Image 1 (spheres, rainbow, N blue to C red):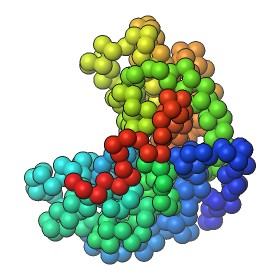
Image 2: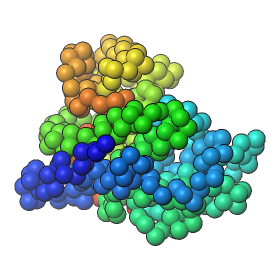
Image 3: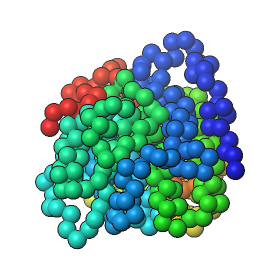
Length: 390
């Protein structure tokens, strides 16, 4: 069966969406490069019906015997790992733990399990992640390195490596590296599901078809999200604290959205599971607090619908306490529109693909908040692109 070519479906002239000076910052340019980067990632790792053709051959024997995946990463890469954990567990049934790379070396050895360790780093040179991989290799564990850049330390030392289609990022905040890491992890979930007999070839193809349509859907929506993000930022850029909420796989995106805002606008932002609001953070909710909620829904997934309904209940409670609601919802959702103050609408997608789409409006929101504050979004204070010392 042939797949739609993910790049041929798209326009490739990014400046066509605006004027020549549209990309005054590398961060904004790299946000707009995400459809192409995601498409290149899929194209790189999918040949006909084969996911990762030959790329994991070096650890083939370990793939037949391992009992657990451990993901070690830091910052945005760890948030990708948190989303990947749910993708992999839900689709393949493989147990996954996500560790902070900086903590992995100090944890106990892998008692009673035979794991594979996945290390994720956009630069391939993150010191904590290199140390985690070296510790795993010392313990006799096979590793898979996920990075934007080939030939880096992580890639050279990994048992096997998977390179995204993002290329090098110039801006310190991760954008296209994050969405392409999510793409690789989604492919990993499908790969393991197929390998372990949890998914037929026909079902795998249907999942891949939906994945390959994402870049075109994102590209069409980017200008509208960008305009909305600027409008919403004008309403909230003077706020000094934000809450981001998400359930299930969307919790990872709440964490990532909060990190983006924190990194470049210097406002205090925290990401929480929606259901945790009542366990402490609710004390912060008042008329001065923007609460950013991931309220997307896959109507074909009963679990997604249940999570969505419970999220609506929490949104109503936030409004009853005069909180300001900024939401990301699925196109056509009138219930969210009635409750929220501002809404980013994203195209319908399967539950486990929604994170790749819904994070992009949050990247743009953070970008515009920081620009309105007059900050250098590409080089936020005290931060560097690759943390090369522990």
